[in-house]
Length: 261
Image 1 (cartoon, rainbow, N blue to C red):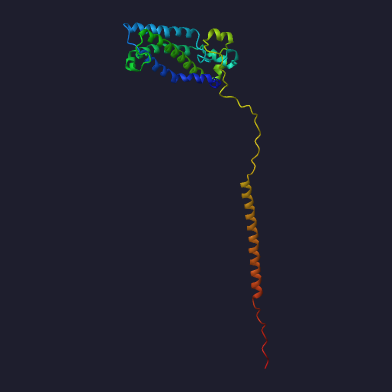
Image 2: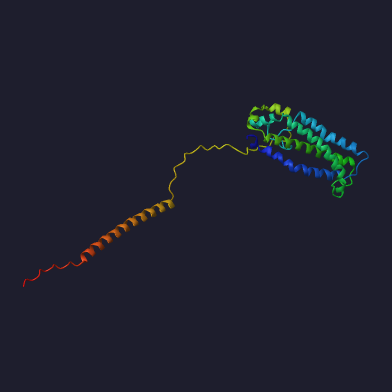
């Protein structure tokens, strides 16, 4: 499929391994300070700033599939198929996955904050205030949300058929700038993973006999010749033996007539 030839869609799948690492880092950050006087309000406020607000932005302008946050594929150099991939992002399923991810992040943030006391001795912010740890955790939550949407969008786009891609609208450069959240420097250029074969078809030559086959045929011909010559010699010997036996037989002497008295 055409969508599976795009390397950036496969690179977005790195989030499968990156998100668990970011959750671990989030726990180490939150372990740097004790819980505040109103932890429920602190968690809801942090989630609203770091997750809910970006969710509203990404709902209106989905993250560009060609963006790796710091680098992106140049908008002016995108092909027709790549612009149609951007058009497929308007589907409902990728947007619903964004809502699922933001809701799940609230539950994960709640659980991580409660259990962060278990790794308090390993925290790089040990001895910091609660405000510092929450302000440090906010960018991590926003990063997880970004990677979650890129992951779900990439899985959605990689499973689309060529027929669906052909029916998708093609977004021009201006539409990409206003309707997609394109973050990063336009320095990322990567060729397609799969290309159609360009060499013309060549006629298949008839199978030529190999040297081994030639030797086997030659040995067979020699064997047939030997058999034929051997058979002739044997027949000649039989004829010779027959003739010799006939010549060697003694002739009976003629009978003499009886004498008259």
